Image 1: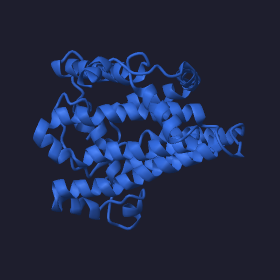
Image 2: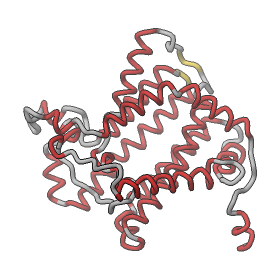
Image 3: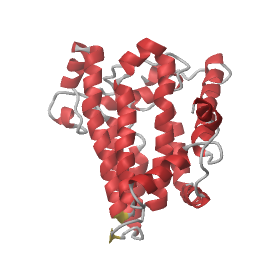
Amino acid sequence: DFDNEKMGALGEAGWATFFVAVATILTAVVVLWIYPETGYGDDFVHFLETDVAHGNSHIVTLAFGIIFPLMHSGLASLRPWGEKIVGARTWRVIFAFPSLCLSYSWIVYFISHAHDGIQFYDISQIGWVHALAWITNFASFLFLYPSVYNLKEVAAVEKPTIHLWETGIIRITRHPQYIGQVMWSAAHLAMVGTSFTAFTMVLLIAHHAFSCWNGDRRMEAEHGENFLKVKETTSVLPFQAIWEGRQQLPEDYWKELVRAPLILIAVGSIGAYFAHPYMQAGAALARSSGLSPGGILDPIFLEFN
C-alpha cells in the first residue's frame, strides 16, 4: 500500500545487513562460478558445448532450458521440506546460489549466440519497431510479483515468507512475471529474428508458463482456502478477471500499484539498455577467454578422491 510504504533509513542495521548479505552471495557467485581461474561456470558451459551439444548452440540453450527450470522450480517446490531441515534463511541461499549461477551463464551464452541459426527476418533497423520493442521491454520489468519488493526477505536478512497477495499488480494478473517474460521475449525476438533467439524465447516462456501452474499449486498448499478465494477473483491473462466482473479496481488503485522500489527498477532497466554494448563486449570476452579447467575447490575434491 502506497500509504504504508516503508523503506527505513539506509543506516539501519537491517539495511546494513542487507548490503552485506547481497555482497557476500554475489562474491560467492563471482569466485565460485564466474571468474574462470577460480570458478566452474566455464567448465559447465564447456561440458554442455563439447560433451552434450557437440558444438550445436541450439542444443546448449535447450540444455539450459531444461536444467535451469529443474533447479529453480525444483528447489522452489522443495522449499517446505528444505526450510524444516535448514531453516528459511539458509534455504533461500541454497535456492538463490544455483539460480544466479545458471542465470548468468545462460544470459552470457544467449548474448554470444543470439544471431546463430536461421535468420528469419531483420527489422531491427526500423525506427518504430525498435521504439515499440524498447517500450515493451521496459514495461516488462514492471510486471513483478509483490514479494520481490521485500528486499530484505529476498536477501534472507528477514525470514522469507510465502505471502498471499491480492492487491496491486495481482488484481491485473496473478502471475505478473510470466506476463513480463512474454513481453520481454517478444521485444527481443522482434530485434533478433533468428532461430536461436526464437528457440531460447520459447524455452523461457515455457518455464514461466509451468511456473504459473506450479506457483498456484504451492500457494494452495500453503494457504489453502484463502488462496482459492484469491484465485476466484484474479486471472493469469491480464485484465481477464476485471472484464469478467470478478475483480474491481478501487478508485485509488494507483496507490497499490506504485511502489518505491519501482524507481530502482526503472533506473536499472534504462541503465541495462544503455549497457547493452558492454554486455556484448563482456560476453565476447568470456567466450574468447576459453576454458580454464577446474577451480578454487579442486584441492578439496582431490582430497576426497
